Length: 219
Image 1 (cartoon, one colour):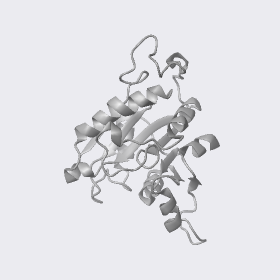
Image 2 (cartoon, one colour; image 1 turned 30 degrees about the horizontal axis):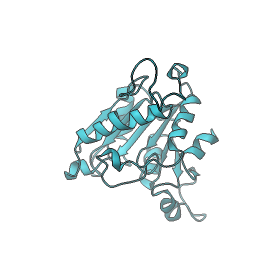
Image 3 (tube, helix red, strand yellow; image 1 turned 60 degrees about the horizontal axis):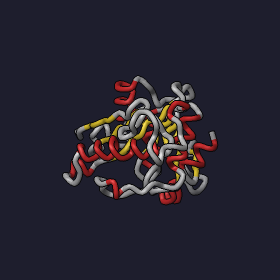
């Protein structure tokens, strides 16, 4: 059974963003205009391949490459009143190629600061697994991460959306009672070609978009 770690972003101003007058780079967004209630349900978003380009090991800021429009998409979804929870597979922790502390540092120090620079002043949380062992309840497509989300954050994915780029993401969404959304970024185009072509596809309830921003704009 793999370890499970979680981090929760700041409720309003991301780490690294000082109180008071925003520094250069923040001036076009006012955190005072940020909504405080998000009544329209939960959207879970896979991180790698949906928000940033997929890379086997991300342990440095320089390893992160944003997918065009992904940050705008998260801001759009928040302003439309949706809760946002980010999810990620991190099996390299169990393999010894990555440390949990490195994942936490990247999220808390880099992602949240970059979110703030792009006008995203809160998300509901970030959860990740640490192994790909099918016996691990937290490994996709098992629903342990959804269950932990309910325990920690008192929110449910049931009836909401889950956005990913792999067939494991689709299966996890279905297993957890979420509406599955596939984007063609990351491994998405390959996943679509292998699983969603032809009339015999068993994944008929999946919505497919070119990218996260197209999905955000569809709601």
